[in-house]
Amino acid sequence: MVAAKRLLLVAGTAFATLVATLVVLNLSLGDKPIDTRLGHRYSTADPQFVRATHFVLKAPLAPGNRITTLINGDEIFPAMLEAIRAARRTITLETYIYWSGTIGNAFVDALSERALRGVRVHVLLDWIGGDLDDAQLERMRRCGIEIRRYHPPRWTDLGRINNRTHRKLMVVDGRIGFIGGAGIADAWRGDAQDAQHWRDTHFRAEGPVVGQLQAAFIDNWIQATGEVLHEEDYLPPLERAGSSRAQVFTSSPGGGSESMQLMYLLSIGAAVRTIDLSAAYFVPDEVAIASLVASLRRGVRVRILVPGSHMDWEVVRRASRATWGPLLAGGAEIYEYQPTMFHCKVMVVDGLWVSVGSTNFDSRSFSINDEANMNVYDADFAQRQIEVFERDLRHAERVTLQAWRERSAWDRFLDNAASLLSSQL
Image 1 (cartoon, rainbow, N blue to C red):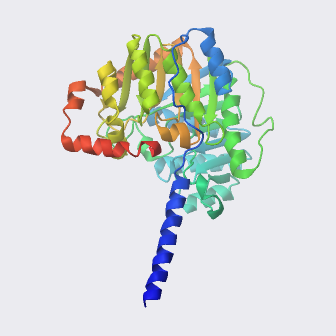
Image 2: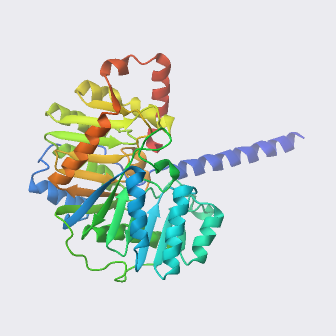
Image 3: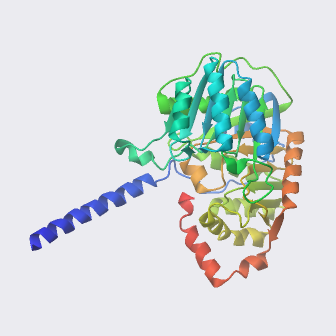
């Protein structure tokens, strides 16, 4: 009996050790994060800033693009569905969120109809976020759509289970691209008119930058399938379509995950007048906080807009709030959006430089997830984003340093406890 108990104890200990080891491996980060802030060496208007973003992010600022801003589902989904229905050759779609429902069904219908008409359709869904029901998936496959899951769990590769594709991008005929924060789900329908309809922004792109957007999809399609989509139907010659300079760049653990963090730190370090940050999930690390505080000290106005009480992940809201002290003390303006979940991911610097895409301002986006952003260097486009930002501010409440300091002891405890998970949020 004693021997049996000892055997069970040994077996139980071995199992617990295995589980703990797997957890540590699965929750490990990608490349080494940047652990020192970048000093102020030049402004966003300086040609050196353009050169730095080109070479550090490994993507040139391509001229001749037209970027259209799409506000909320009422503008986002009709534009995307119209592009799908007009497709003649190819459609590539990669998304973290694709859920069954009214809007999910509309995309299934449109993609399936095009596939039946001979358009080559490729859909890459994250294994966790892509939650279409089996009947819809089977219907799409029967219509000829190639569907792949990104990083499904395998016992031989459990270390990658924590690495998800958080990208949200679509390219039609290699000529029209979409990127931003919106997933394909009913939560994004409507016009942020109530707590059930989220606030978000997406972007439609035409011009040479669409080739970079397509390259972002091709990169992860290779990871999922081993197939290279290199024909002209996917990568056609692209003419000028507008006046904006733009670049698309990506990040992925083990393959340049530091790119997103670098972009934000370069942008904050170059700011001389203003930083307006719309952040669905804002959990800055010590380096980001130090960089923002340094910009405040040199006279930069910093405004940060985050979700309020309508937050889908309360632990993230609390972990975020735990970091606000130095920012508020330094003069940053922090606002909480009130009507519904605020899911935007847009940064505007000095009314000139704009970054949009799937990336959150947190360690998960900087180190763990696969992300894609589009940077636009255009004063007119930046002014449009500032107008959207200030319209959102009218629906937000400012958090003061006094109010932050006067949180209850219980709230401070919960905020600080949540912050212990910051590396995974």
